[in-house]
Image (cartoon, rainbow, N blue to C red):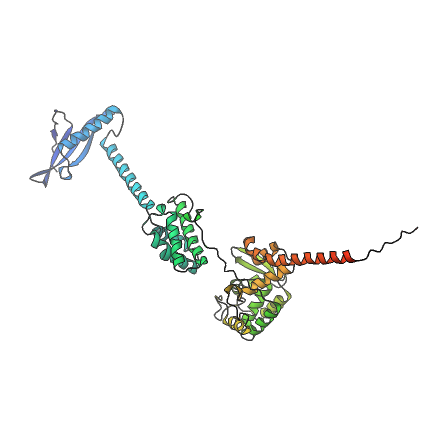
Length: 413
């Protein structure tokens, strides 16, 4: 770069801008020029470099910039040096970048938010099957309707169309509920991120899902239980023992499969069910269950009470139970799935016997591990039947009393 500065003046003869030429670098037919200017500010002369002609700077642009700085100085408003001006420009560019990112974030689609933000976090907390189903809900049902629509612009019309697609494809009411549960969870997460406001469109008053009525209603009689257990026992001792545990404690199959010896207290005659639906509970043993577990305890070598041959948790009801159930013919001539017997019917049988024995629904709820009384309420009809019988007994007693002769006793003198 050259060493000598050459002053410049504008059309009005004002000075302050200068330049010097590069020794070798060219800009067009002339040497490249570097511009700077100087001005008086806060009691001293400030000199600042502006830029090269090859970068687009010209004398006129330099004088315009210098004039703007001097006007800011006289008004006491705005950047009063080139450095301040550049810093302000940098801040404005950074703010513009942030604003663009914010706009882009607000325009994110339902699927992009699910894939990039929601699912990576949820997957660490979910079971593999839960994660698989959530992805299926989004990919198969939600995204085909919402597509590139920003999540903030998803309306009631979108969720109604999703519902219509599910119904047209013959998906069950339960499946529809699962899909929209996924939708609502993702929506709530997006609201926490500030992407949407207000409740999910699925919460709208005019949005309704078909009612689910697939709850099994089959309870076993004493004779049916005896027949079933006998058929299962000849096919598999482990399945037989698991069936007894369920019908005598009301435990779910998964709870029995995960039961560890550390949760069996033969001295206190109790079983601790860990993390059942989010909460632990203690179940008293029947005499039959205690005897069963005592006979098993002597040969226990694994942590699990009912491990697979590999020592892992059983994931499916043993085939020996399924074959025993089929041979017991408890489902013969029964077409309604809700009335067919299954392993879960053992749990229902336990609950029904509790209610029929006069145990109140609150204690039945605690024994079954229901989170709310709603699930236990299905057994209330059994309790109502006992109440009806009690009233009929009262009426019969009243009729007997009414028809009886009254003998008056004489008072002693």
